Image 1 (cartoon, helix red, strand yellow):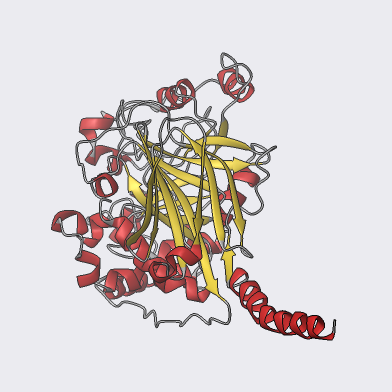
Image 2: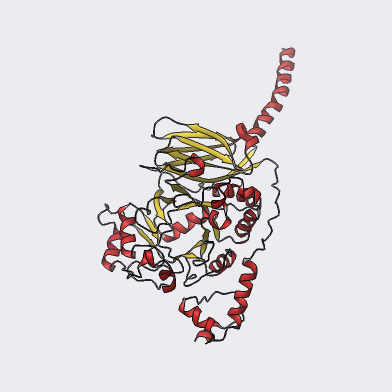
Length: 467
């Protein structure tokens, strides 16, 4: 009996370290889940368009046609974002910038704005003709830096900043800062165009030109109201390599506790473009406040009919139902991320610009896929993200941060990039300050509706200058 007790004690002594190691391995990761607050049983998914144009700036269709077409296409939430033209309720005509419309005369024709009637607006809110599923109006949307030659554009939401704001070439920081001061948020648009990646045709472009990574990472780290970037815009032509840029930015910002979100926009200007990309927001209720919280916290997905980089096919155009996520579960103790979704045939996990795992499924019904971090630890950096490919197109899932037990992420320096935007902005601000009320510069500014009450020269009494 004594020998049995000794043997049992020795066995337990040998087993305890193994159990401790197993427990340690099971708790080796802390996984950040942007969808942690989502109640998948009660929250709904809302098809949303946050970047579209009317003939108020450079689109071909009047306001009423754009609103009605999105209603017909089943959108739940719509925000009009014309260049330099702050969005207003749909039964009002916005204050446009005539010169901007004239530059794109081949589209705008300088035609009337044609808002919808107040009665029709209320019908759309009530879901008339759609079984009571109304469409939410998000006013106060605008595309900033609207007249710069390099297309260094960004979106502004939820503030009164942006009316007539022309912007400065390659200067994203000034509008980000002013929108934040006004209580709004911003996202960066089609960065491959101004950065030059679009024209290069080179997947290694951002590795060879790291100043672009620093330039945008600096904004995300220093301005919390700058929520993310448009990684797949329009037909994904100008943003083909921006997923590579996005991965490089994530690697720099996550150690600072900042995760920029991945947005997708149609950036539509003409008929046939309204349904080529959108975002899907998980919301407890369909309100502007809930949408803003979703944009800030990452409880949404980006979708596009095009996926030039991920599919390796510039000619593919998705048709039919978009991939749809019905549940996401993260278990840090087990080190797993589980995704339940439908309308897809391939799920790809990626990290640090490389594919971690790719799984094909049979049929487009509901499938559940799990990534176990420990199985791919060598390939996973400070985050992992996923996307779903199906006949309808591509659906981007927001990044999950990954931290190992005892790990402290190294904060790589993110310098402020000094390029031509710095002296251009400085000269512009000086001229703003020096310009007397009736100077040609002031007159030109007024003609362009350029007046900006949020300009960062605190000692200037703008009300007195234009009063």
